[in-house]
Image (cartoon, rainbow, N blue to C red; front, side):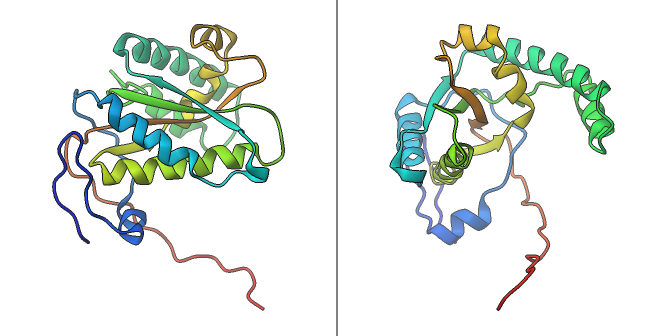
Length: 201
């Protein structure tokens, strides 16, 4: 892997396969803000992801205000606890175990949350958003940043009060919330099982 340590605005030399194999979710961040110039570069990489019919199917919100992030975290935790109590899924106990931890902060104290919104409804719009999310995660890595998708935040972000506070137009939906930041330490990638190939003719 071709890498060098990045400063705030420096890009690490890394090929595509290096980025794919070295990207992993990080859940421990330094309290250091991500520069606006870097965020704009990440968003530019995100919009270069494929989109069905080349439509403008995604938009972005960037939150760096710690007070807003903390309030959003609290709001999402309340929703998660209520939703998990009504669910009989296998993930219910795991969700409760995570959310009930003392001092659990949904965004792991990262200084930046980027939310990808679908701009209209359609059969491929969610996929468009997730393709942009992948570009955003990979480009974060080459800037020396870590990332993690925070699916637990989706329900809260789509509440009327949050959509109103964040000035989200009617008809838009939060699809992919992702924290970005400077990792507090080294995190080992997760192990992956070999691909399950159902058919190869």
